[in-house]
Length: 235
Ligand SMILES: Nc1ncnc2c1ncn2[C@@H]1O[C@H](COP(=O)(O)OP(=O)(O)OP(=O)(O)O)[C@@H](O)[C@H]1O
Ligand SMILES: [Mg+2]
Image 1 (tube, rainbow, N blue to C red):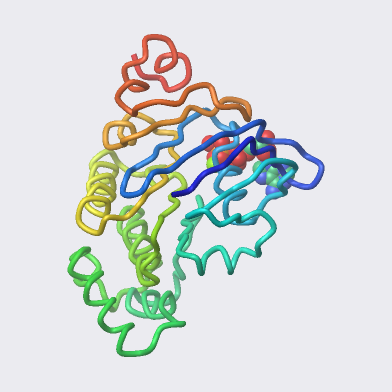
Image 2 (image 1 turned 90 degrees about the horizontal axis):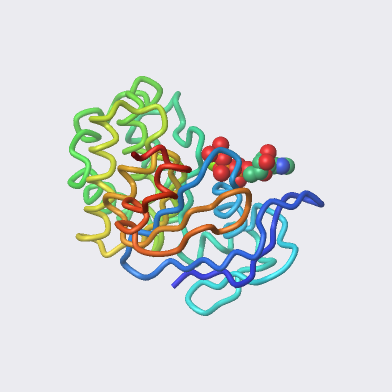
């Protein structure tokens, strides 16, 4: 569904990724793990037209993404949740969801908001609260909800579990699994806290210093005798 072929990319003249062959299959959770600075965010930025492509190609449903502006890529059905804050703190939960659906007809906005609130009951409880008063975990749920307003085909999630208590990480991971199983969404999840992500993932990639060191099933990487210990802190 989403694929990079011999991708070399970075920022201006800076080279970050080297010869990346990455594939995210439909209705699967693909996990990208690796140490700080490995280039995980850069991979997502490259897909979304936010980095410099030096060589190679990116395809989504057979269409080439290279050179397209970000808004066109988003319109094709790719939703990106960047690593840092993606809700508007001064607005309420309801206002945030409405803004996320601003391009839709108004009756559609209402319908989708209802669907999302069914999926995330915690947001319904807090519908009139300012997003800035939500906990870190609740804020991630809102950010995912906002991405879903546009009914994307694929969700690119960058470090959903950073700074969350283990119980919240578990909840977020359960939601992500639910999105795959109930909505049939395709998900790419970039995570430094690797274990939880690999536990729910289908396929996994390990990125180290801008190159792919492993490609295989998430379970295989989770139980890899050397790589899991060396790069993921999994004993
Ligand atoms: N906008 C930018 N301009 C120049 N260099 C950048 C930019 N963003 C990131 N880099 C560099 O690219 C390299 C990869 O960064 P990237 O953010 O992709 O890593 P990451 O794997 O997501 O790390 P982390 O786990 O810390 O989020 C780093 O050396 C970083 O300093
Ligand atoms: Mg990152």
